[in-house]
Length: 296
Ligand SMILES: Nc1ncnc2c1ncn2[C@@H]1O[C@H](COP(=O)(O)OP(=O)(O)OP(=O)(O)O)[C@@H](O)[C@H]1O
Ligand SMILES: [Mg+2]
Image (tube, rainbow, N blue to C red):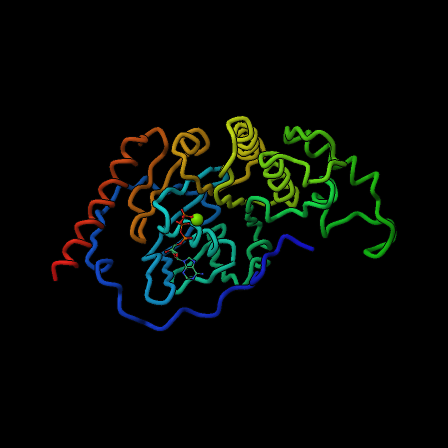
């Protein structure tokens, strides 16, 4: 079993051109606030668009991610954050627009293609096999064997390396022999992060890694993310609805509204108040557009 999910390949093609739903077309987005693009981008996109049937989710997304940078992706429910991440990890295919990895244009046809470029996605729980131990999960599909692929498993060596690696990245798990199903959500997330980075991911995409976690577990994952970016040079895109977490974790934030990035700022140049104001303004625009639609 692998951490591949059903439908791990890309979708086929975009849907036929259809009418934009009433209301959505009438919405206007401000030009927004944008930070200066860094020169050393590991990932960059140009004009990514994506629609699902009549619903236009992404309307031309330009994002960039620097080496060792942690970028937070913020936006209302249904604003397209997961869709964008799924495009970057090869799970969905964009309708138009381009992705560059280290300034080289790439064309992902599957999650495997993105992995080959060092891009790993971590989904809470889904990435691990609960009935296996921590070390077995860390070496899943990359087991160490004595005589080639079908030889004896080198369990002792895998245990030792798992212990070393986890201690290296400061993950505190009771034992590498513990079954993953006995771990807390935060510990599982830490093992999933460790597994992704052990495979030398240069980029980690984390879709709500702190969802449903208590303060202590969140702190564990936050510390790990910081260590991976600061001390191991891993770049990350993190989706989270909790602004406090994002301001603690991220170097820069992008706000996704109505299919566009409307704010791109370093955390020290924006605030929870500014993000909240922009979100409330979007909500008001939607309500007004809805009312106008009803009047027609
Ligand atoms: N496979 C799909 N088929 C059809 N519509 C989809 C599909 N995936 C997402 N959508 C729609 O696209 C929009 C964006 O969804 P997405 O999951 O990217 O939002 P999100 O920003 O991650 O939201 P949340 O914060 O709630 O996780 C939603 O309206 C959703 O219903
Ligand atoms: Mg989502």
